[in-house]
Length: 149
Image (cartoon, rainbow, N blue to C red; front, side, top):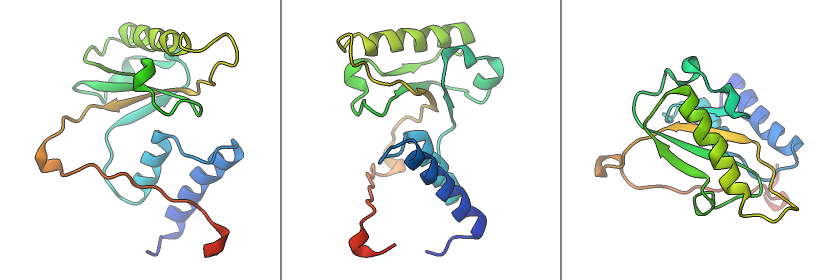
């Protein structure tokens, strides 16, 4: 697949930032960014680093239920720790409360040290599953010097 120059630059920037952060994996919102650059449709979403960032303007694009997820490089299975919730109330103070409570709940599963690093929260448009959407696809890739660069 040949990528246009600007698309390639934007995708490489996402990968560069993850690498500069010392990560060998991408966050969900970064993957959405790559998929958008490849002209694939993704759900509405927004990443916030702090519940205080939630306001009416930020929530306006969401018209039905939303999924909120905690974002942490140390937490792979967020739902088991209370790090995934579906909410239908778009009142900013309520969403701030849900995110703050989620943070407390997730961190309560860890001893005093070391606590996982919480980068923020991802708010995603809830898309109910129907057979017409097809099946879920899990895709992974790994850079390996054996295959060249």
